[in-house]
Amino acid sequence: MKKADIGLIGLGVMGANLAMNIAEKGFRVAVFNRTTTRIDTFVEEAGPLAGNIVACKSLEALTVAIERPRPIIVMVQAGAAVDEQIAALRPLLGSDDIIIDAGNANFRDTRRRMAEIADSGPHFIGMGVSGGEEGARHGPSIMVGGPEEAYRRIEPVLEAIAARFEGEPCQAWLGPDGAGHFVKTIHNGIEYADMQMIAEVYGILRDGHGLSAREIAPVFAKWNEGRLNSYLIEITAAVLSATDSGTGKPMVEIILDRAGQKGTGRWSAIEAQSLGIPATAIEAAVAARSLSAMKDEREAAEQRFGALQPGAQPADEQALAVLEQALLAGKIVAYAQGFAVMAAASREFGWNLPLGTVARIWRAGCIIRSQFLDEIAEAFDNAREVENLLMTPAFSALIESSQSHLRRVVARSAEAGLPVPALSAALAHFDTFRRARGTANLIQAQRDFFGAHGFERVDREGTGHHGEWHQA
Ligand code: NAP
Image (cartoon, rainbow, N blue to C red; front, side, top):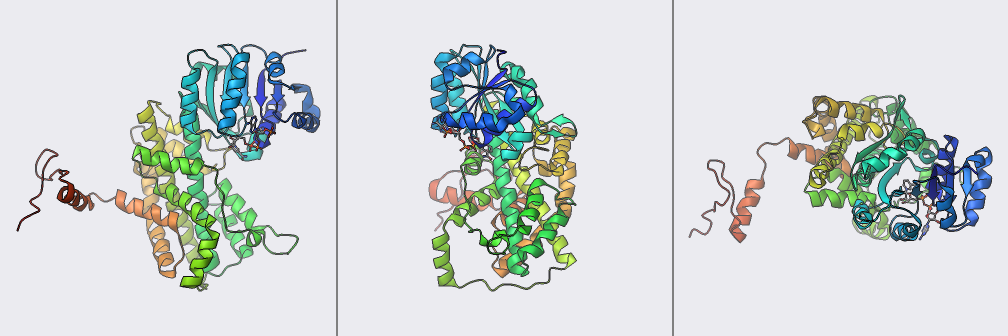
């Protein structure tokens, strides 16, 4: 029997769909899953694609079924399961084979795994895959990190299965070691901020303007035809239009307001902090999910402080236009923060991350896909030296024209008691970023006062100046 071109371990939601995608593109894929009954179900569901699938009931059988040198995608739960799979595979593989971890790994784990495996092989690739179930099946965005020569060997498969934006495949090798998983992490961090800001605007429309879900849905649908056009705005309109057949109520109204998280958003905030890069809109989004999980405490606090009185501000065209622009301004800052974190990580780890390419492979397939990312790609391509998106000509003009709307929305929400943590973090970031003379002179004075830490002066060279604090 003809050997398989590639192997795949882990036929869960992502793995099964990715394997179908690979088979559909004409590659033979050998598959294995820990719970072997899942393999039979998978083959049954593959229908006509089964001809390109080699079902293997053990790891040994899997490794024998693939043409050498063997690329094997591992799509299992992130964490210890990946280490277990690597340990089980290594004795069965040669130094020229390739293990590709396609789960949502912490890039620090990827760096560790790569270092552990580096001497004896096989090659190790850390590959971020975005797009959920649909993306995996019909075209995800794929972010690759690891040895470039190993990537080149699997590139034809990745190119075939990736999403396409105007014909260009949304996959790329982004740099050595953990570069791919780091970029995927920041993608998810930006996704958190994007979703949170959309939820905040939904909250303003619901609680400040007194609109029902069915009334809010067309607002997002209309915005999806303008500057905010994106997958997340599109699905927000769809979600708000959906009805629960059991109760006849809008679906969103019967869903508990307690959001889950698996780690990538939190990792984005942690890595931003470790690199000393402000990513406050992302941090606010992560914190908002944590606060959402404290349902009991929030209920007790509402008892204690009283419920917010629902507003009935008219949601006229002008009010909606202001909200649309505010969301755009907030989004620009969140993306600028995410890209700044990637630029800093690139310097720190020597990855030479191509930020324009990152934006380009996010234009389709992934959860934050949008036309907006095409503009970001162009902004980075046109201004190579500028690392901060806010300082590129296109985006500085865009934030300049939209920031007053963000200011108005944040101010009115604060007065009305409507929480907008990510939008207000974005505004505060912009206001702090654009200010040449800030207030850290006072911080430096305080530090010198209590700890003799020294400071720089505006009128002299040197860093170790001290104040005359303890005058009688
Ligand atoms: P899933 O549906 O829960 O499937 C998990 C898979 O991992 C199953 O095949 C499971 O095998 C296997 N597994 C778990 N523990 C294992 C172990 N100790 N040893 C061997 N196999 C083990 O998960 P998923 O949604 O496909 O996610 C897979 C990876 O993709 C994760 O890293 C996830 O974060 C990432 N990801 C998910 C999405 C998404 O939208 N779902 C998007 C992007 C990335 P059994 O059948 O034997 O339990």
